[in-house]
Image 1 (cartoon, rainbow, N blue to C red):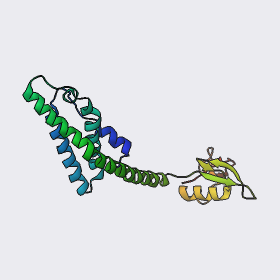
Image 2 (cartoon, rainbow, N blue to C red):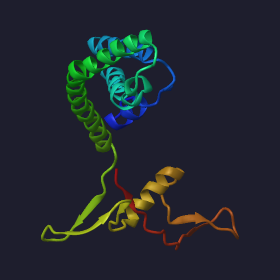
Image 3 (spheres, rainbow, N blue to C red):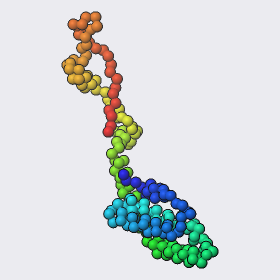
Image 4 (cartoon, rainbow, N blue to C red):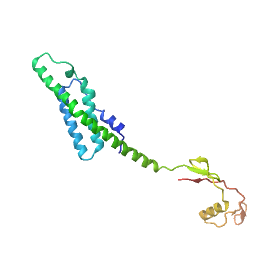
Length: 197
């Protein structure tokens, strides 16, 4: 099912983030997400690729930017060194990869929304349009969304009913007093509207 970029963005943001998970693990997750996005893009699954690219950006720029390991160092020397390497890796991703992925997401957004709008337009064309009534000079008098009123042709109506009933004279019906006698039917039939499709 074709979705708009807004719907795909909503799906992309629907993931679990735990701020207590180490920055090192999340950086590996980011690399994995980017690999999945590129694989989907290469196999022309643009919507799934868009979700992964967008999730990658959201994780790096929104979630991990507030990660505790980016804000302060640990007191022990070994952890401080490890934290600095992870920070450098994070800032390298932000500086080098995020702009390229951001450009890909912008291009995909345009493509996905263009395809989505074409589909919506195609679906809209399959819906019946309202009929327009014109006066003698060609000006629009009114818009009818359900039917067009025409002159009622009683003769044509009677012929259609007689054909439907298998009789040839709709004005003759069976008498209630004498079942073998036919009498003239004086009933007036209501005007039926013509439906527009």
